[in-house]
Length: 332
Image (cartoon, rainbow, N blue to C red; front, side, top):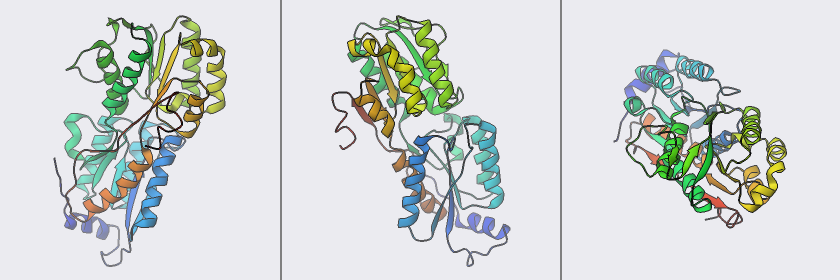
């Protein structure tokens, strides 16, 4: 699918804010993360700022909730519409709510797109494109690592982000479909109950709301409750980005990790996560490329603001890292 936005609509928004098209010196594009206290999104911000430095007449406006708060993110989008920015790229915390907000932006003549997380299928027409990971494939690759390390299956706990976050639900679906050998499901997939030897333990999946302290506490609680757990998979970095807290929570199980009795697999490849992998505190990381998302978002919004066509979707790729290839997997 390809979409095009009208320059006339964009000019109308500029004039509504008291500026003429001639007086506007640069495009002001907003990159809206789910939360600004998340190091994953810091990398997207860095990519956005790098594009700003390279591109003439483009300003990266990085703004989002201080913490993962769905309603605050919607309010920020509404404020950006009022301000008359020239384009909005958002990683939706709540896909249906974000779709309604982006529809209002479109009605105001502001080009919109998603990154990192997308809208639900029925709402995708309200944004021009999505740039980021094919989220289902994160789940597939995490599940493939689990299958390699536990070929007979076992007990498993899945940890996710927000229950309404489309990207995490797609990752859960990818995990469950791959382990169960099924297809044709809807996100977040069907709960595993003995499928191909895999069973989700009571109390899982866990929903962190992208809160690192909550995620680490969930990890500690589930490990304590299920002493014979075979596999723990997290669909995001939230459990690991508080490095000291994660290390303290997982180190009591070091002997199980070393023997392969317990397998820990986590999405993302942030620097602290790669250090944990190299130290044997996880068995695998399936990483996205957030810097590339932020960088490309600025170029895409400029194309949209100038009435150009863009591809939809635009995938930025994955990195699959294990203890065996940890030194070189991000250099490929």
